[in-house]
Image 1 (cartoon, rainbow, N blue to C red):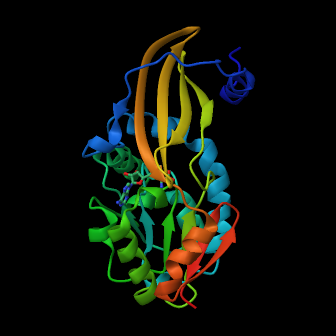
Image 2: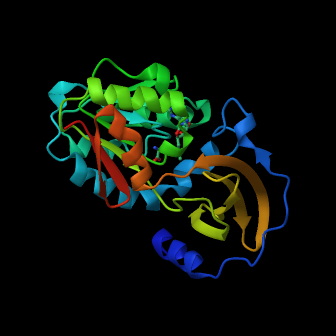
Length: 269
Ligand SMILES: C[S@@+](CC[C@H](N)C(=O)[O-])C[C@H]1O[C@@H](n2cnc3c(N)ncnc32)[C@H](O)[C@@H]1O
């Protein structure tokens, strides 16, 4: 009988990571109109599940008590939509305004909506970047693994919207993960997922690009036994944020910031 997928995954993850990665010509994602589309979108849905089991549980706690009559939950950078079921479980009756500018990520997001009628009835997908895509009002905002992608204009629009269009007390939930300042990060295989007879591996490592920017390298491998049959490596930058950085940034907008697990919760008092 076949070994269950969960056991095969656990066995793969306990194997020590390879000591080094062959140098590969990395694609510079930041130079593309669709940085996620160049490689990450293809593998995101397969490799992001473990992250979402933790993030999803936290969101359910933080969003408890949100009143959906004030407007939709805005999911900034919704990606493939892996978090959408958690949002709808957390706030029953809510609609979601899912902002996702990457065509590659939206392809998976649209597929998810097509396959899940509950989501299709409640989720609007806006293909524009944040600065152009905010609705008239909202009951909450979620940014999972997105804050570091936003430039000053996007963030100005975000915090102004939170100060003016969200009801008092409604949460802006922004995931803030270490490192809070750029550092060297050794290669780590963060996921290895068996699908059919192949295994999909996600590798990640990083280095400082300047005093606030990390340059991350992501390598996605399709493995058949001991052989890597396909590999794509992509580099992109991400701005580091600590909870204190968020607090300092939102204060001039009259907003407060508190930490909750891996997230900072910004609110209008
Ligand atoms: C790491 S993914 C996170 C996806 C999803 N939130 C999750 O946690 O699975 C970051 C997402 O942010 C999106 N993004 C990047 N810049 C953006 C912007 N200016 N406005 C809205 N979304 C953006 C990317 O296209 C990508 O899908």
